Image (cartoon, rainbow, N blue to C red; front, side):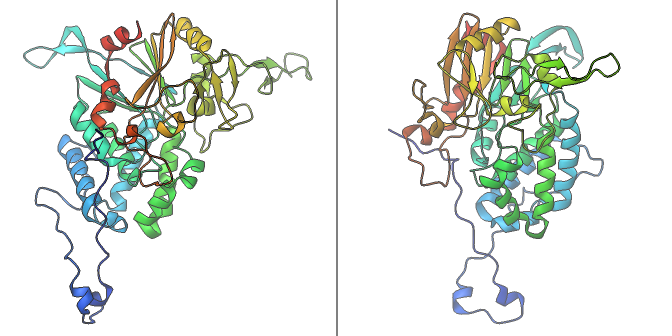
Length: 430
């Protein structure tokens, strides 16, 4: 039996306010029959405000979650500014952007935290926090809310690593992204937000996010959209969890060969060229990843700065070696031998990537579907490669996509793998 996730969709929005009544004209019988505009429940503080000292609290973040949930079910999209004023958006995106831009390309995530004694002071012993790795969420706000409540909120004992693709295709990409930014600002060392290929100007202009923002913020929409793009540029590309798990949206990447120019001789005139046109592909290093320039609206598919595009767009293959990703037109395809080389070189046990939902996996021969919310794609001597996807009933609101049973799977099934402690990860990879 297939169960529809309760959190997958919200009721249709209410009609807009009648313009006749606001202009002093008596409403018609049809207009008076419209249901009254819903009033927020008393426990919600609407509109949302920005704290005077700029410090967010658990109470503020939980109120934001409840407000977004209520608003998505009761308020037309164009009235989101009445719940989240643009001034509050500006404050949140500014603080979050500054924070994200300061993080390295590959973020180290250390789950080993000093334990607290009876007086709440750190002791000499350390305990491992659980680490929850989450795949694509694609604007599915209600599934994200369910996931956070079911897995448990970020805390001292629970760290979240989100693997990108927060927007596009779902109806609440803006709320989804802003909610995660609020958690990041509130608990910067307990939630890490990585970039996905949809956090780009190209994808958001094609797959819905730009239009969503324009509908919701009207004449301020271009301003809100530009601020989001600037924040996307600051998102890190990858993470290393506990020194043994590598996570990134797409996966592995090529080496960008650096060599002296042959045209200029002499020490003073020596020029460093990037040999990005070489037809020989080799696996890139973490050192190269850390030096890549990630602050680009659209990761390039040609030129010297190829690593960000590889990390965000690449896919695993059953064939050995590295090859251009002809299906996507950007990024790479990498085989099990590359997974083994990368894991062994850096003494890792597991690679967790996302990027491929059920619709993508339907087209891939030799790969499992997304019925469980994750697939094991490579099993090698040093560990495993796993793809995790965290948007059930995907893609929402697109009837042209054929619905297989996995598309209406409960988010609880997705969490079977999304919630991974360091110890569990090591057991899983062995």
